[in-house]
Image 1 (cartoon, helix red, strand yellow):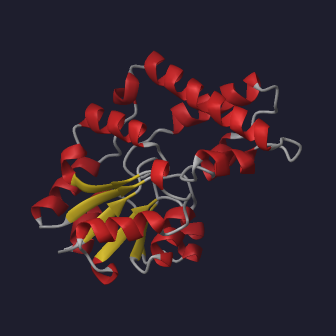
Image 2 (cartoon, rainbow, N blue to C red; image 1 turned 180 degrees about the horizontal axis):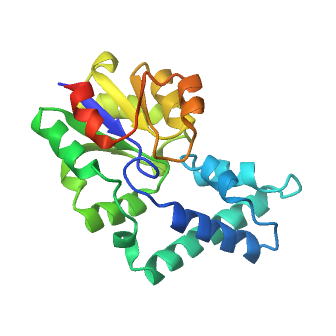
Length: 218
């Protein structure tokens, strides 16, 4: 058996409009300077407390980070509802065909994401892709990326050795997590971190379109 593990935000789905909008609203609600779009996208993939710690001014204490995190969650849910739910967050072109192609080729598929499981379930329901995945690792039960816990658990649940698995993601956190777990790590160029950073982090390949994934792996 072989296992392909996918990041979600910036890899399978383009959620940047919701993320940037909710982050701006949360910072405004807390009376803080709103971080730039580039700064916000640079932390996508981290668990929320770690992300907020990077974005918030140094004078914000631990209680402030918790309050900022709660404000972001509330704003994200509100903006998602206002824009029509996860159906308004598109899959990247070719994502569905790539998932189907790997499944047809006998690969097991997994998710390793900084999202909470509730958010993942919303995406699955909106796009009917939950049926592809046999292992789902979320921020609820693991340390933040790039800690390898998500990948280690996905390997254990799937019964697949590290040398028969691959991690696919758009950020250096994904690449570093995969490498720390001993699996091949592939970057995608359509996400939130620059190609050069993905290469520096150790990506073995960088995809420019999902059409390249199935031929690369099969």
